[in-house]
Length: 271
Image (cartoon, rainbow, N blue to C red; front, side, top):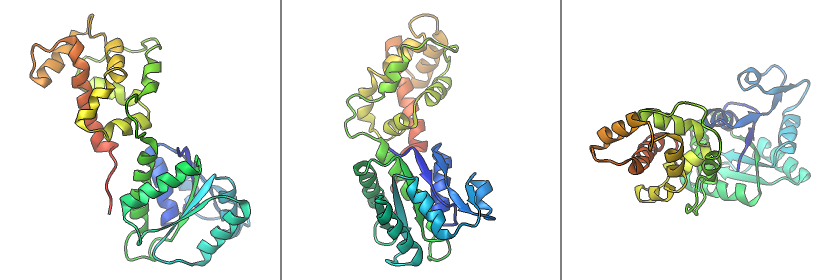
């Protein structure tokens, strides 16, 4: 699973990768030549007197693998430089053609490559913005976002959200929420991005698999069986079921959480 993205921040593929890291809350960094303005925007380290090759070499060396996005071209000085450095350092390199493969197919291929090579720190480089007839940054962003969520989601969802189960043993540190909105906000703060992505990409029928994990967390932390009548009343009102029992409130909250996460953490099928 990707923990950090490294890139030079140059307009195009490299800048898009850093923007994705910022958006998704991933660690990020990298190096650039002295005097380049991207250093301040992305908090990159400047390498005084460095050449483009030395910047690339530093990034490849400090990562577990590199992806280079091309725009239909199979050879360029930048690509060949990256290829030679990766070969010399014995680091995996994936060359991804933005024109030769659709977005979701590319994301799936990259996710498999990341898993097979056990890459946690990923170096991204590629074509510069303006050389292609389309936006390189937009295509790279869409592919990387989908890749990130694909790499987090386990195919076996029979026991998801184990981190939440562990948190059940922690003491309650805040007043329990009294509305569905507050409950969903609480869960969004508590769940990891991996958990949220897993939930967002479930079908409605699969939500029942969360009963013994997320459902238990809700029952134990939101005081539904004692004094929290406000949350129970709001769930009854929102669901239209005025006879809704406390034991059934978790399902209503999970469904509301699912609806929200589908708008923010669902894999987008890009073209």
